[in-house]
Image (cartoon, rainbow, N blue to C red; front, side, top):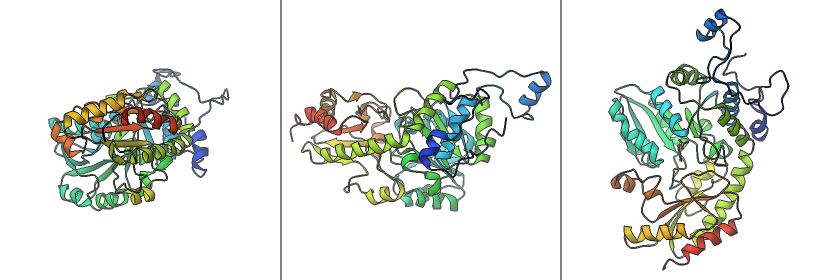
Length: 406
Ligand SMILES: Cc1ncc(COP(=O)(O)O)c(C=O)c1O
């Protein structure tokens, strides 16, 4: 076998070509579809070969906890699409985040994270002090707050852009310039855009994280995650951790995700177009006070979105009119409950549109203060728009919205 992290040879081809062809590693039977290697371990010809594989003198496969040929095809394809040198796949987005933090930090170190991040990410970083690691939370879009939070022991900056669920943007080039000048690694969760719409490494980020569960699968079937970055980081810091701690992606899930990458661009383009229509409908509805969608000219970072993303993505959040938390929650729940087409579920990134009340679900474990800091109120609803007709989606939302007193 060649070097596990060898750069894919078709890097010079277009994104759409690489989406379906990068990473392909045919066996000698010449299969056209990528082979699924459902095997926990690999057989050696003799004891000496086993010893050489375990000792890393022979680059062949040993055990699927750390390397597997199907997983490798997914890793090489995603590395290529993100314009990164290497990738390591993980069992979920959260395990990718956890592994990255463990790879970059040691006891006594500090990190800075945007307060507007996915609820479990916030929970994980809040828990780090138990292990001697510190995390400060700052406003995603306030560069001076990031600078002020830096300490001599700061090792990493962590952002999602656009953020979940408020679609707030980080200025990637600005954050990258600051982090580079202070020797800090910039880690970007590219879940909402995927490389089809945004390539953080090209804006100066050091590491890209994925919850492949979302748009990379795109059809709500499997969990998965990935870490993309420089070869030295992936090979020297991430791989040994994977080998020892084991949050590995299964070969079956890697195969499903490989198929997901093949249709990523066309799904992201169409779902973004559908989201734009739904966002415009919500924007003119009297029961809605605010729509969070980077594609609207009213979004405070619309211009930034135009410069660092090729489209605006498919997540749209909106806030309902209401007097107090109790009435806001009951209105939000009644809009959600009135839907017939849209699925009430916590996932996003599916071809089927999903609807969520973040304050009582994805961000329900946050303290009321942390939720307030993150801007997640009781009247907020998150939509992740899929491939249905936008007209049908608007009719589905109108059923509940038209019943809300303006
Ligand atoms: C932005 C973002 N990052 C990470 C995660 C975690 O991913 P997973 O559910 O695959 O662990 C999620 C899940 O919703 C997410 O929305």
